[in-house]
Structure formats: C-alpha cells, structure tokens
Image 1 (cartoon, helix red, strand yellow):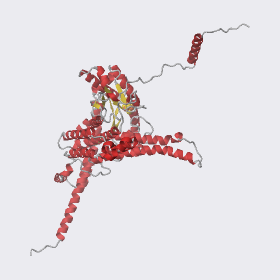
Image 2 (image 1 turned 45 degrees about the vertical axis):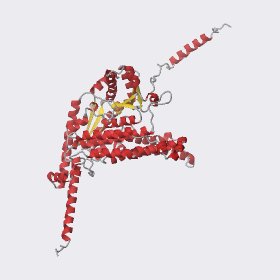
Image 3 (image 1 turned 30 degrees about the horizontal axis):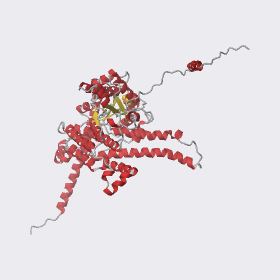
Length: 596
Ligand code: SF4
C-alpha cells in the first residue's frame, strides 16, 4: 500500500518541525505574548558600603526629617535629607517623568533629580554619585498610583542621566538586601525604636509649633526656640549609647551573656526598649526641650479661626510649594492651623488590617462549617483569627501609648489621635471603609469628626491634582456637607501652578470661618460678664497664663483657643473671688483680741 508519510531520520529536523507546529498552535490559542515585564535588577546596597554611601530621604516636615536623620546617623549611617520640594522640582519631575502622574510624584522625583544635579554641579563626578548615594523611600503596591512611585523614580533618574542610581524601598527587602545576604540597611532594634521616637517626636513638635506660633508675643520666637529644641533632641537620638547587656551586666554575669546568644538577645531587646522609651538620657532631653518651648510667651486672647488640615498624605504634610505653602499662608491670614500627625495614618493601617482580617475570615478560616461537636476545628477557627487580632491590637495599643506618652513629656497640650473606630463609623455611611487607596475613608471621617465634636471652625482638604482616592472622597463630601449644614469644608487641588487661585479660594472660606470664630468668642466672652480689660489684667497678674504649656481645660462645643481661654480665665477669677470672700468671712468671724 502506498503511503504519504515522509521518512525523517534527522533529530534536528524533527525538533524544528515540532517547534514550528507548537508555534502554530500557540498562535491559534492566543498564547503568544510579548515577554513579561520584570523589574530591572538593581545593585544591592551592601554592609561594606555603609561607611561611604550616603542615604538620601525626604518628604516630611523639617522636624521629622532632622530627627529621622539623627537616628540614621546614630545607627552608623551617612544620611542627608533632601530640600523641601519647590516648583522647580515639580518642573524637573515633569521634564524627566512620565505623563499623567499625580503631582507628589513630580515634586518628589524632580526633587531627587534636582539634588543629584546639584551634587554634580558641586563637582562630584556622576559615577561617584551613582556609587556613593542611595535614595530611601516608602513603596506600595497601590491600588492608587503610589504603586508606581518606585518605577517613576527609576524612569526619571534614567532620563536625567542617572541610570543605575539606587532606590531603596522600605517595603522591598530585595532592594535592601545584598546578594551576599548582608544588607546595607539593617532594621535593628535600635533603629526601629529610634525611628518610632523620631516619628512621634516629629508629629508632636509639628502640632505644637502650629499651636504656639499664632499666639507668640514676640514674633519669630517660636521658630527660634523650636529649632533649638529640635537640635537638642537630635543630639540625643544621634549620640545615645546603644544598650548592650554584655557591657551593662555585672562582671560575674558577663561570660553567661557572651556564651548564650538567646539570653543575650532577649536581655538586649528589653534593655534597648527600656532605654529608648524610659532611659534617663531620653527623658532629660524631652524635658529640656519642654522647658525651652515653655519659655515662649503667648497671648491666647487673639481670636483666630481654627483650620483643620486633612487630605492626601503628602499634600497635607509638606511645608512648601507642594501645597502652595498653605500653612504659612493660613497663618499670615490670621488662622491657627491644626495639622495632621503621621501617627494617624499608621494607626489607620493597623485598624484596617484588623477590619480586613475580620471581614475576610469567613473565607480564610481553615475549616468551613464545622459541626458544633468538632471542638478542635472550632477552636482552630477561633484562634486563627484571634491570634491575628491580638497581635494587631497589641501593636495598636503600643503605638497609641507611646504617642500619647510623648505628648505627656512634651507639655501635654498636643491633640490626641482621633479614635479609628469612630472615624470609620462616621465615614461609613458616605464612604465604605474597605475602599482602599490613599487616605481611604479618613478624609470623610475626619471632616465629620472634627465638625461634630466642634474641634475646628473649618476643614481644609489638601489633595494633589488628579489624586484618585481624594477625587472619590470629594465626590461624597457634597453629601456630607448637605447633612452637616454648619460645616465649612474646602477641598483644594494642589499642583505646580495655580497658587493665586487656590489662595483666593481659601481666603473666601476663611472669611466665613473668621466670622464663625468671632461669633463664638463673643458669645463666650459675653457669658463671663467681664470686660476684656478685666480679663487681661488678671492674665498680667498671673504670668503662668502666658506660658504655652499652661493647661486650659477643654470645653465641649467650643473650638476657638481664645474662647476656651477666656472662659477658663473667668473660672479662675471667680474661684479666686470666692476664695477671698471666704477668707474675709473667716477673718471677720475671729473675735478681736484685746491689746492687753
Ligand atoms: S493617594 Fe493620590 S496623590 Fe497619593 S499616590 Fe495615590 S493617587 Fe497619587
């Protein structure tokens, strides 16, 4: 019988035909795609480079940055903070970056490129810049464009001629660990506790400076004193001796710690923890800073609208062109600014992790629908979730405890962290707390929280142009404003241009807030039945009332600092009057003693 089969006795030919047929079938099935994108590999930052490589970072307030740099330096790193991003940085970011990014990317990326260009102009060869500097920043996987920041840094650096410049991500261990397994940037206990202190101190000092400066009696005194106070704290964070049990233990115990690693590490963890939180040197530094700040003279009778700042993480923190220098502008216009601490954001992340764990547990639990008598399975379901919740709950409590403890040691007048459960509950009718990205439900939650508790006269939300989560928040804020009629809320989209327009919109809303603050003050003042001359005379007689850390008890329903203060001074005048009246009565009741 005749056959059409072709005899192939060459292996290479068989392989060639097989590959061709495979390619044909893959094409039909639509499996042919271009090569998958992989993040380009990057040179590691190794331990042996520590002594010559400078870590660059930025994006916070100058208080945070000075303290963070001190922690890096105290842990043996070379570290420099980048300047506050300005409009030129924004333009540099646009020139070298992709189109359609949100403006914090342009500002921060451009700022880094600008700094590297500055180093080059100073005479440092480009190769030396690539070898001797790295940039340290936070990374994320989204869901908003924050997930693209790392790629944007690399892209812009490449376009600007700094291809190969290393960007270390806080979340990305690959970027931090060297191929040898010895990382250049090591997260030690000293580094972790140092950073915790630096972040909390930065937040508290930032809150204090905006509380004190609008009321300073001598212009410029607050800035000067705060720089001195931050310098003192910085020195402590930088020069603090690291606790090592092998050095601190009595001589007879030293060999035991030397030979037993577990024992040594356990004692070191607790010893370092104690030293960083309760150590004499640290508390002395805090108290010295507090005394310095308390020397500023303040006049709290000035009536000022209290403006709460919310919005996107970076836009609400930066103190420069990135938010149109909004804090300076507000203070110049006669307002008191209530800034947002970074600690709220960290507390939000922990709270959200807990809420997500609870909501996902029905699908994540190890045993589906166990019978009631299957004790082991029921227990596994229970303990699996609760282990997670206990861990996160402990983290939350420690975070709050250390934050509020820092407040206590630095004068006790800083605003406490807003409770996350309440923020979520207040926001939830308008903004689902599980809608992730950016500040999530926080923008709406804070707006309602500060309004219903009468903790400010106006809420100003600063958000970058085109910010995805903030645009969502703005969408629902109109429903929020409709519900809370006395709310003064203004969203401002920040970008590299349009400062005059933004300032004029703020001025208009601030006008309303000023009226509100004045009316509140007049009502409170009238209720005292005393003239301002009388009140001021009492303040002059009691100089402690001119100290920033004098504790004015908070009255529910009153937002303004001057209104709160006048009510309190009135209480003190009345109390003194009652005291003198009682003393007079007692003196009159004592029978006169005859002279004989
Ligand atoms: S929160 Fe907004 S501005 Fe920030 S990275 Fe996400 S989209 Fe951009």
